[in-house]
Length: 291
Image (cartoon, rainbow, N blue to C red; front, top):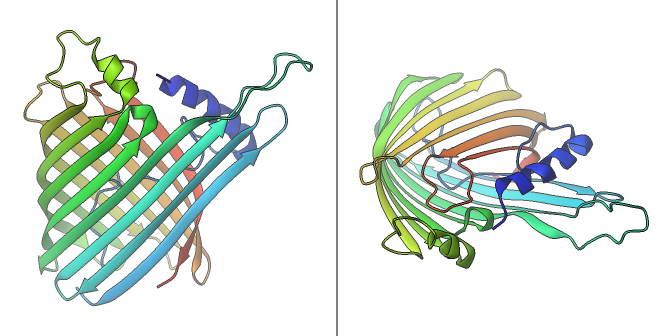
């Protein structure tokens, strides 16, 4: 099974071209309840709104060290009175090949080093301008975490401490159901665990979920979004996860913006030998608002 150290080596080669501090891969987007789950930063008054945005970035390098990275995502928001619906999807993919040891050595084929697909749906009902109840469903497929499917169900409540046109500060508390379906490589690695898990192919967990979000609209063109998310299992004593995400967005002109983001995911109990507990990613991408 490929380790995160291989992905780290890819990121180091991308740094020299993109000048972006990144520990795993270039251009990675997260939407599936991994550091990105948050109540939508709606205006001061609950109103009708329809929004659709597309985001994408990539990197292509050739010569002695060939590499390729692509990140794409889309988000949709529909709000009618106290009802709000969010949908999001993202894909991250990267390939690389090690440089030749000597000029006469043949170069090997390009090999995937990052591959994940994500999707999320969320519904909020706002009791008033300061509080809502929500239910979210997320799905993730990540080859290098050994996951064919990670399904998450997240009911909960959110409450705002500050909510105006410039600054929003809020928290969320709820329940998280997690279902993991592991790929063949992960199942083979799980077979070496002592004691062996009840199932090599799947795992379920029940968690308490907490989230703290902060959004600051510094001016008409510049905005900062930060989120800290935690999961604590009520089944496994040592199982907990902590996710952090931050994104700085600046408007270039009218519907086009440029975003720089970073996501840190820590899983104290991955459940698969050889999987590192910490993943750190960063991205630079263009954002286009269709609606």
